[in-house]
Length: 122
Length: 107
Image (cartoon, rainbow over all chains, first blue to last red; front, top):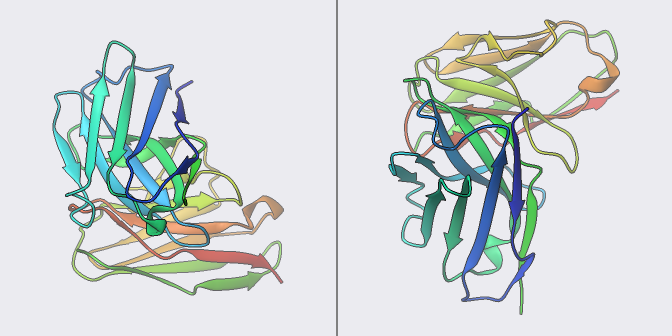
């Protein structure tokens, strides 16, 4: 059974960089049939797609965050990561990692991690 | 960006009711639409993808329909476990976008 687990600091200071890692078990991030993505949800608000990465290294980012976001993968550890720079209180959210089911078509997210709350505060 | 608008925002219903949630896209997304269910403190769980394909393991009381800009999620007979928030998401083009969510409450 595929499992995804987010990890990283739960508290980040304003203007600093948010860094999260998603560890995948029960499947390989090198499988060409899948993308791997990050989605966030501010408290009591809707979901926002941050970006996705394919094992080939192709990345797609939300333009609203593109100047501050980097998503990368580490196939040796079966992990992928999110970095978001220059954070503000507006970046406070539950961050989810998820698998994008591709198979040659646009990808939808079929497996999600449990989510991790990141609070931006001094 | 493609805007996704769900209606209603809140829906009150009883066990056994048939309910329908609507999702409208600001431009055509073909059938590249997913529906997910989210319970408090939990991650979303996909129910339907490609507008009408039931994800493996999802009960058959859930169904989806639509194409282009208008889509619906129908629950044929509400069960106690179905009271949750439902999200639609388009994956036709980047950036992927979600509806604001529909909270299904017990009447």
